[in-house]
Structure formats: structure tokens, C-alpha cells
Image (cartoon, rainbow, N blue to C red; front, side, top):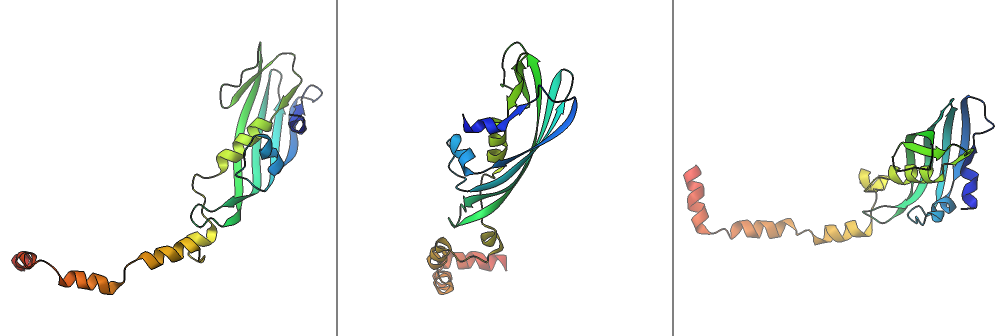
Length: 177
């Protein structure tokens, strides 16, 4: 948790109004949470922090790229990641983060740590199926594709099957004509 202190926002000394914070996120950040799918990460989190009389408002924009493996070809590539999110922080008697977009912190707190929120935003921005752009465009020649192409039967075999049609079906075809 020591390294995650860099993601603390001290709001007690800030004036009312809008403030901007930028955070760099790399693969070490995700390793803190035990998340290993992003082997490399080059992300920037832009946080617009709005301090009001009795609440705080945070608008997150996470953008950059992460090193992922294609689910089809298993080839690694830099995947562009873009995500936005919103969080309201209110003051209450005890800490409560059970709601997605609302955080309640005790009245005496003077800072909020946004590391968990940045982690969730980035991980949830990754699509369920990751496909290399060259696989999508058909430009990439990968091992699995070669094996699949070799497994497809030749047209000659299909023609032989057409010739071996049961004669009873031929009589039914004659009825159609």
C-alpha cells in the first residue's frame, strides 16, 4: 500500500472549485493488485477534482496503451485503452464503498486514495475478447490459421460426395422439376 500513496488526493488544503491531477500508471501498479494480464502498461489518468461545500466530485479519464496477447493468434501487441468514469465522494459517519459511483468517507478524513478506482477503470476497459488489429484485417499469418487452413477439406472431396448421392434422392429432385 506504500506505493499506492502516490494516488492520494489531499483535499483539505484545496480551495472550492475545480482542480486537475495527472497520474502515470504502469505495470507495477497492476502488479500491486495481483493483475498480470497487462505485462506492460503506459497509461495516463487525468482526474478532474471538483471540491464543493459538502461533497467531492471526481471525473476520471484513463488513456494510453497496454501490452496484451491476442485471443486468436496469441501474438502480443500494444492495445489502445480509453476509459472514463465518474465518482462522487460524500462525508458520513463511516467509510462505505459499496456503491459503484458513490464513496462515503468519515467526516475527519482529509484525503482520498483513488488507486482502486483507477485499477477498476483500466481493467474494465479491456474488452472480453482481445483481437490483434492485423488478425481483424486478415493481414496476419499465424500458426493457428495455418493449421485451420490445412484442416479444411479440398473441393475435390466435396465433389465426390455429390456423386455418391443416394438414388432415392434423385427421384425426389425430379419431383421438384
